Length: 215
Image (cartoon, rainbow, N blue to C red; front, side, top):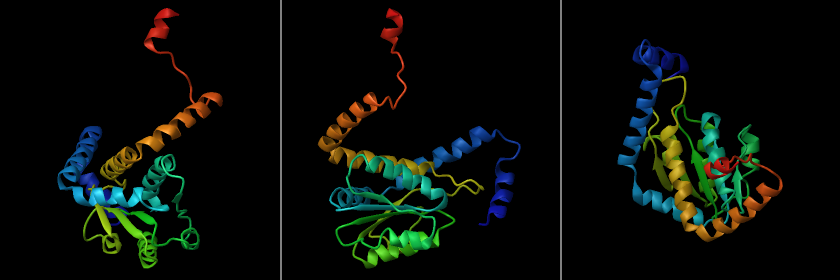
């Protein structure tokens, strides 16, 4: 659907109703259906591929870029070699991944309206021998054909705003599952980071209940 067509449909579905309740109900339904339909074996394969990869490449374009950034933010705290591929232009995309090879994993994230650049990047990664993990909404999505491992998440709200709560939930689960496999490394990493955050006052301190009572 074009953005104009989406606007017409959402006007019919939601206009005049409690928008907050309607949108959140639709989103929660997508998470429920995603959980029910999830391929647990594919999820386990994705976790294994990621934890054994030499380097992890992540790409999401347009609204999917925030999902890619979120995933990369946490993976960078788990692994030393994670690259969130810049999506500003086609040339930049391929310049940042031209060294990808058979020991690497390429995580491609794409939801309607599907990005041709994400598909081309996934096809290139596959041609270089990398394992391609696709996070998309359907087995008929363009990205599914290039994937070695397919993780599906519902995202079909007919709105001008992309509904990405179910994909984000799948990504959350992926981060947690990978983190559990790398528990010892993460413990050491966060011990170091906590010292850095404390020394450079990265976070605002708040008093706990006990401190407030004693003050």
